[in-house]
Length: 216
Length: 290
Image: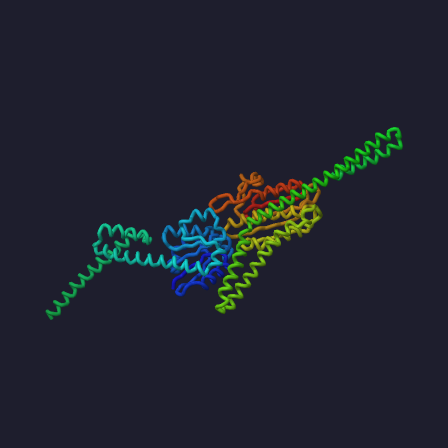
């Protein structure tokens, strides 16, 4: 199941938009709605843990809280700016009643689109498939990149990487936000050499067993 | 003005009586009486003009205040419009899927939202009611209490708790001026509370204080916001000075609210003071109505 997440501080409106999207979403997709997370730092792990493929953010996130102690101090575009530190291509869309907002427009590169809330509600049957398509494009590109990363990492582990391939590997690690990129490759090399070492130990063990069998 | 008019009328009567005592001065005396009547007529017209001007100023201040309040609470109204539209469209999409319970829930939300929008419309319209533009005896508790009741749901939508305590106090005021004071102070308190992520509280009290043996109405609005830095206290009543800023620190207020409050209080020989509320830790505005 592929997931769309809506983040909105207004519980009733969040539930309505959630129902609206689920009424128009293609098969194989699911929409979930959430109140704003306590901290911006929580968003990256939230997206990974909940397996979110597209994020829809309300712009004004600090108007209403789930309880009296949980008003957040950031807006939708702050989440988008934060997420771009980790992933430059993850599909992020903003819904707002005030498109003419300087702070929001200044962050325009951090998200894929801004939708006027009324426009989103009135045209949800057209907009939701568009959001799904943006997520599909992201997933396909990501899958291709992951496959290429795996192939190049394996070659690196086998010490069989050309200089150009090494440059490409580093670029992919950067794009896919594999922060511990060098250690990842080091780990792979270490694992392979451990396996090789274990295989040679196994070989000599087999030889020893065979010799002992012959002697007996 | 009425006192001067009475004095002139008394002088006119006294001068008329002099005709009997000094008939030789009748022509001069009648001329003085005629001039007195002319002064009285001018005074009447000036009084009418001043009252009209006061009423106009009251209306300007009242209308400016409605504008400021609309800007501050505009998001709440827009949210109700979004909810109404969203619920109706969702209900329309879900109706063919026979999900009756969810459709019913969304329709109830739509009704609630339309009530909120209607309440805001009534709120704005009732502020400019003709009766409120005349200076007359009003019950301050009724006038202020009604404002607080009308504004409480708007504030509650952003988790701001409103507490109101009052005594029944009467006085002669333009109701529209009193409402402008309340609206501006509550809008500021609401905005201040929203700067805090928790404990959003506004407290309003109305009571009387004896000043020089006279009972004066005292109206206090306290909030749990960040408070007003001491160095800004002198400036906040200046026209166009605003402490309201967006998340990037850009000024977003009109800077008119408190200068309107100050202007009203100056006209009624009242006063306004600001300090830190010892309990709520935010700003505390104390209004002494003249």
